[in-house]
Length: 629
Image (cartoon, rainbow, N blue to C red; front, side, top):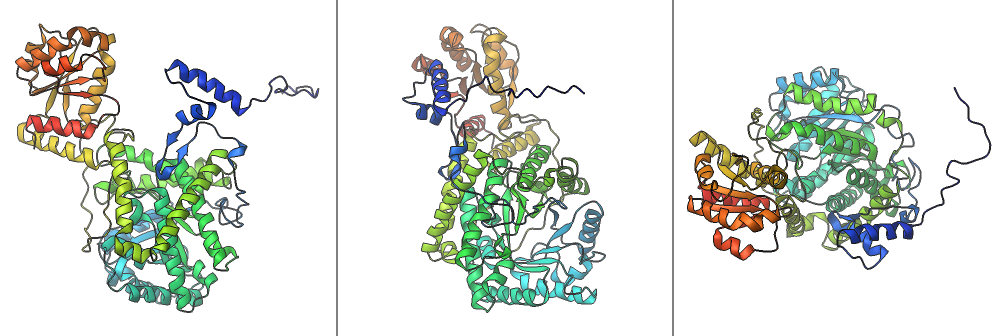
């Protein structure tokens, strides 16, 4: 091994420190070359920022000046850096697998297989849409209840499900001091899911009673869950998800303390559930901000102990899961799981890649549980305590998200609290507005969905799964998915394929050599496939003399011109006229030209497709014109 001499010289000695102003001036120069003329260095920096939800933005550069607050130490208030000093370094996060079947024998087999293969906790749907409460003991047959925590998701049946679980503890002779579970009492979450406040006061009282029993007799059991998933799954933003969870948690603290449970014990009885998305930095910041915000609530309630540290269960987002090309969901859930682990979640549930299609099979459950196993055991992600801590970007994003969430939480409190905000429609309306703005970004592909709005595969065989039992309770906040608008288009294409034996087609009229038309032909083909439309690019190039015959042979009824602006200026008018003469019901043009538009429209060009255009509206109109129902 070569040892460098210690001569006191630094490798960076000849490189002077650069200032932010110098960097901004360099950015200004680059932007001017693109035609932009920013007024100042700050404006140049703003031009490179990426907008996020909640009025936040990702800046192109972060420095130590952007960190406005001290995040503290891991395991110490305000718990931004984790609820425990050791983080997940000792054994990794709790790998919590979800089970939603109704057959207790099949569910039992699946749960035992998961436990034998690396899962450390079970999340079980009981009652409506899950295992019957009366069959809970059978479903848990063979499960060591003092080793594997059981998390119940029983909806309105949380009280009888909890009693049934206590009976199982007794029958199995599990010492109360050794029992591990979460009873999942969440009356306000039930209101969000069903839209009904009937019996809310009774359920809040039952939750408080369970909390008192757990505090007194079962130190390893938590009674109450603050589930923020209904707000995320309705299309809410990260700040809205956090604000709703805070308002719900505060409502439960009020109910528990009114029933005689002291504030510290009440905090210890709560577990918070959040969505983890494929935006890993927002996921990291959201979990860190959630702990900081809850620590503030606990402080106001006089809780200064470790009970003020928020217990967090992160679940990979169902909103991001796609039904087409579901294999890509493995990548999404891996990134989401990474964000949850880095963000300090105590327990992580990775939804199987086929979750949007129905009941997952053994293979998809295996991939889901192994996602955590690889990140913990092979990537050693949990060995570093708060690996994102000290990142100027993450610290600033955590702070900004915490402030946005706190403002929303205060608005809910001013409206009378979480129950009142749910009943008045405040939450529904505000979340709906947020989702509508996001739908616009999805439609215009500003938020691309791989395999759906970008790079779809038309001839991919569908993945089929047994249908998941539908809950009998309905109403409440809607459940949305990023792929829903494109899924409707693809369903129309599938029906056309089943009826006629072929997919709807659009003829790509490519003008000039490949160098001139390839980029826009590729863009048009990608966009058309997102709507289930088959692009026909044969022959390689056409002109006004040959396009009519080529269009007729293609079997298409709609055409799209593809080329560069120079060739458009020379040929687009004549080619469009020839296409109309050949019977084209609609003529598109790929690009956003500034000149000749009126002449081209007179010749037959109906619409222009380009980056930022409303892809969903264009595709729907094309299918309509083709007569595809």
